[in-house]
Image (cartoon, rainbow, N blue to C red; front, side, top):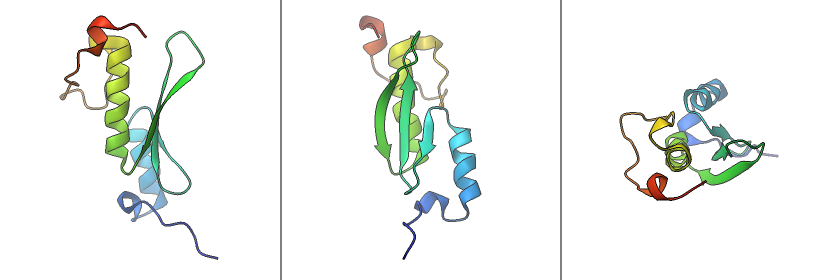
Length: 94
């Protein structure tokens, strides 16, 4: 029986995958190597599923877009120097 293929970004060691998921907020790695992103709904225990991604950076970008839409300019982003260029936070409610 063969093991599922590892994510190329984590081919060095499983520990490096663990460090990647701690580096970015709102992401985690599935057993089979895909990175997933989700965000908590404000004032609720619910979560919004943002999808599965090939790299931790893509999953973190999806999290940044969602948190920016929900919380606006006060959001704590994974990439604070590249604020999402979307206007959803200014006219939509969560």
